[in-house]
Length: 376
Image (cartoon, rainbow, N blue to C red):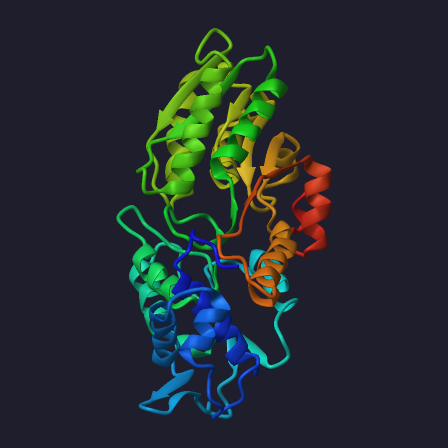
């Protein structure tokens, strides 16, 4: 049954495209007529015509006047493709690829398109140059900067009915499948754990000035502030500071935190910072200053293990683990591509972070061969 939440022509095009790509309708064979398809899907012939026009635009079928619609011949070297577009490094990319490769049929290829985290125009060119007639599914970690993103271009892809799976973070308002971190909810969970761990000891929190378009940072900042206020806000045992930031320069933010630390370091034994790259850059400055012993614990969020053993033994960290993506990507693609009637509403999974102490994190990242034990 078709669902009302997604236009019928998109759902029908998605189903017929999959059948065409999997050989249900042989090359040069005649497609079922409009009446037959309309009866099959319970829609009007007008809806079927829109769906068929999409498929014809992709070169999958061709309408011949007075004869019907026929399946187009495809070049021998043109195989169906799963396209992965990502800016992630090898550790995270490996987890993503495993999820995709586990569902790719033998007659399909996986094509990787690399982009840069904030290069919106670069991503747009990649999207616009895709040959959608050969794309079985698009799996993408979307980019954005403080000004814009490519939501409109992704929306056009959705209108084609090509399965689209968004990874890592959301694009607000986009009606696509999604496996993404719940940056607000997960950060709130981290904050509650951090403040409970600090208990009745002096704790200081640093948030940053962030443009609302910087969605991950903005979501984390808001969660930190909300939970801070939930625990009573500033007071005798808690103090918060807002620091200026440069999105790509951790040392800039770390220096601003360090400047405040210089004036108050005797009162900062427990410190909350929203990311481990900034926390480590800050801690290096503290070590150079010779007052690292004053810091008892640092609370932060990270993707990998950073810094030396002394830093990591003091680190209370919630990690964004991309291994969790693998089974969820497999699940979403299986439902979207292999179900007799693919889901019409977006399938969405919101991931939380995982707390690991130093020993757990060290073993985890050593097993993935990205942590140098000699640093400890």
